[in-house]
Image (tube, rainbow, N blue to C red; front, top):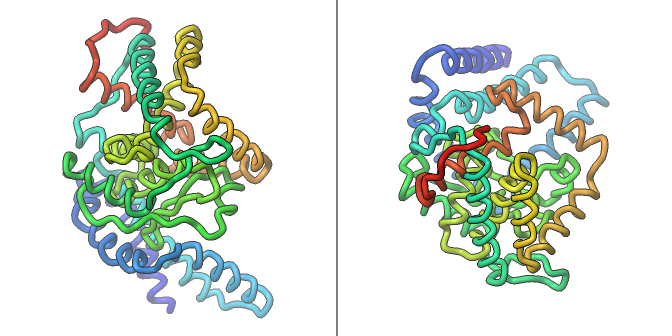
Length: 348
């Protein structure tokens, strides 16, 4: 038992050092070895209809409680920790050092003007307005999913992979947690489990945000761990899915983040576009605010700080703010495909 623990700990250390110090190793690992783990561990976990990682969390908690009561051997603790650390490094940690999706796809974030951001927000407002009346809505006015999120999310990622080779590969179906309160209380919409290579999402939050979250978590299974890139990949997957509910989810999620930035740099432009926002979509924003307001508290605050520290430790210097940096990529994407080449002004 001690030998196995030491071997796993050593392997974790070597992998971590190689990914940070050996040029090209993380990229090679992410594109050659990591897909094998997804194809084996991820596929096996995918056969189970519920979240294996959620079940293991409950089991581990029970084991810890029993062990504290009865006493536990130190070598057992060491082995458990060594296994968890190795799975994290092998299925997540190394991937933080790989080539970014931005570099691979050629969609590079650059400086842009307030005018360019306004144009993007106007485009997104139009997209949301066009789709808001096409989705199913419940008695409270909020969007209601009438399709299989799991199957459509996988299809959306495969469809996007036809254009971007780096996104090709096997995708297990994303899973809704049985007890989504675990995520809600931490202000989390989803989570990627490197221990079981699963994409999990919060099934209690508003339906409009679920497709976007499912695709975000699935993007991590292609080795893209940077949060702003996972957000952007999800935006692309949803908006190109061919499903109105997914497209609406992607455009509305992108609209929220882009408008948050526009609010800070050009309030008048933000106010004008906010007035053009469709009334049918207002219900989604209102219900979303009310849902997360229920979980504001000390636990959410601590979780946010832990997440911020974790992201910064893995090279995302903006921490939790990196989630919003997808705005840079949306603007770059829009400029490549739709822009009228506006002259750069008030660059930020």
